[in-house]
Image 1 (tube, rainbow, N blue to C red):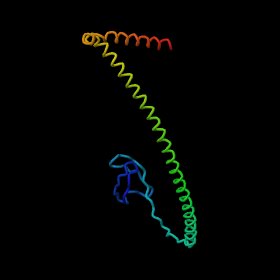
Image 2 (cartoon, rainbow, N blue to C red):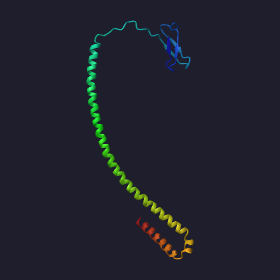
Image 3 (cartoon, rainbow, N blue to C red):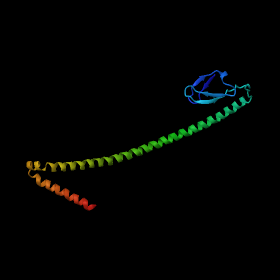
Image 4 (spheres, rainbow, N blue to C red):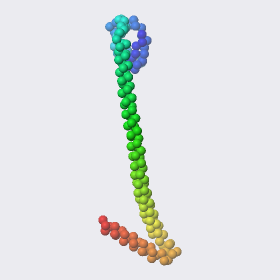
Length: 163
């Protein structure tokens, strides 16, 4: 007789004569789990055939046919909903694409503006750093640089006054 440990599911082949009819404790040799085991008596009564089975089968088949027609109706409704959703998704995609294009245009403008401002700042810092060698090479540049610095100071004061 094959007995299975309820803890680790290991199978053991045990002689049926070693287990009394009232049952006994068994211990798994693998996981050391102890449990009570009682013999299961085989079914002594023969199974009886029910004559209503054929009638029940016909009723079940009729129910299945009704269920199939209901299933087909549900499938048809689901397919219609899928078509409507796909049409709606196409409309939404076209709207979202136009919104994305508008957003990318505005984001490109701000990107270009940011790059321009950073480049202008870098140019001013470079001119300030190399002011003396540039004035030695181009003597008329001194007046232009002085005017540029004064203009930048005026812009700075204007921005401070706005806040």
